[in-house]
Length: 280
Image: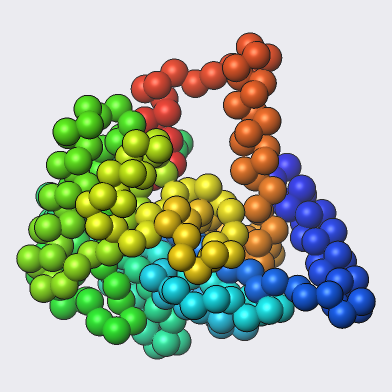
């Protein structure tokens, strides 16, 4: 259903874009931020194909971009959450080979451990392992930026204000010590945040924070809260291309309608414990 709606949305938005160009109306530049997690050795060839598509259809830029988008151009940003060792070993070489910048979001207190949280499908991640601090430090470069994913990967909205501040502040401090530079970017575990948490991030000194809401990015180059779209190496080629080209940006509107229906009792609302197992 998502794919079918996205395909129709892409056809409609592309047609509108061409009509605007025909009447010499400015067509704004667009940027999609993609979010990966695990990239296994078996998935490396598929991930490689994704990055070929990224190079073919968009201009890859870093997640800390502060430049205005050029009219009519398509841009993309690659991010990787959790810092799984398999992603470091399989995704980073493919990105470096293609000169594509990437930001890896990590939780410093989990270096070298097996993750304890679950995926959105309720599956355990016992087969994964978070990269070690030393291997991550060696990975950082002009193309590879390290960002914070909090200290221990909690569901932030459930924490008291002081505990949330510790997660946000201490992770930044530990990364500063490890990398000898500021970690200015943060992605929220599970994409979960509140206005209070966003304000804490500003006060602590982050320059940009990332959600899992699939909105277009950098319409304002100084924006603080930036949306992303989850992708997986298993996404089939046409599905990935539609994601890359922004065809899934109708989803936030659908989410809002879903929330309204839930508030009115017209749709089942998940229990809090189920929400905590939502998309990592």
